[in-house]
Length: 254
Length: 189
Image (cartoon, rainbow over all chains, first blue to last red; front, top):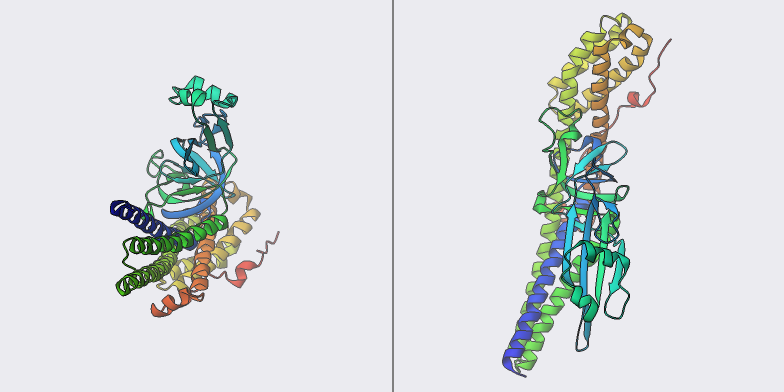
C-alpha cells in the first residue's frame, strides 16, 4: 500500500480517536454538572446556573409555525437529509438544518419563568418525518413547504436521490427539562417586578456555556451521557491504539 | 519490533493516565461545585431572611394597636428579630428563623380574630409580601436541603469518597424545621 495512503488513514484514525476521546471527556464533565445541580422551584429561582422542570406556555403572541406540519410551536428544528451510498457504505447525511425559537414561559406548580431558547442544545423527539424522492409520492407537508419557500433541492426530489425531512418541535403544553443560566430579564424594568422570578430569564452563557433543553427526564439524559462518555473514552482510546497498530503493521515497524 | 510494542504500550499508558486524571478532575470539580452550591444556596436563603427581617418592624407597628392581647407573640417576634440580626453562625440564624416563622404563623392566624386589622390595607399588603417571602424561603430551604443531601451522598459514595477524603470534606448540616413549627397554630375564637 502507498505510504501516503497509510499515513492518511493513520492520521484520520488518530484524529477521529482523539476527537471521540475528547467528546467522551466532555460528556463526563456534563454528566457531573447535571448530577450536581439541584432542580429549583421556579418561584424561588436565584441568578446563576439553574436546573428547572416544567410545562411550556407560549408568551403572548409569540409563537411560530413549524415549517412542515404548520403546527403552533415555540421552537422547531427542521432537518433535510440526503441518502448517500458509496461502495458498501450507505447512510443519511445532513444537507440542511434550520432552527428557530421564540421566547416562552416554563411553568411549574409555583410560578413561571421566561426562557430564551436561542443557543441551546435541544434534545427533543422528532414529531414528523417523511421520505421523498423520484420514485415516491411527495408528501403534502413537503409540497406545502416547497410552495411557501424557495426550496433549493427541487431538482433533487424529482430527478435524483431520496431526501428525508424531519421536524422536531416544542409546543405549548410540552414538559421540558432545562439546564441554563438564570440572568436578568431585559423586558422588565429594574425594581418593577412584583416577584423576583419576573425579573429573571433563562438563557445561555452559564458555567462552560452549557445550555441544554430536553423533553426527556433528567435520569434518561444522564443515562445517555453515561453511554456517550464511556463510548467516547473507550472507543476513542481503542481507535487511537488500533490506528497506531495498523500503521506499524503496514510500515513493518511491528 | 520491540520499539513498536514500547510505543503501543506507552500510548495505552498515556491514554489511561489522561482518562484516569480526567475522571478524578471531573469528580474534584463536581465536589467543589457542590460545596460552593451549598454556600450559594445558604446565601440565597440569607438574602430572603434579611428582606423578611426588614419587613418585621412595619408589621409589628401595624398590628400592635389591634393585637393588645398578643403582647407575648409580638415580643417574641421582636426578640427573634434581634437574635437573627446578631446571629453569626448558620445554626443561630436557622434557630432565629424558626422562631420568626412560628411567630408570624401565629400572628397571621390570630389576625382572623380582628376584623378591623383584616380591613387594614397596610396590614394586608404586609401579610401578602411576608407570605410571599415565606413561600420563597420554603422553596429555598428545600433546595438547600436537596443540595446538602446530594453532597452528603456523594462524599460517601465510591469513587467520590477518595477525593472527598483527600479534600477533608465532611457532612453538611441540613436546615431543620423546629418541632413547634410542625404543630398547627391554635386559634381561639
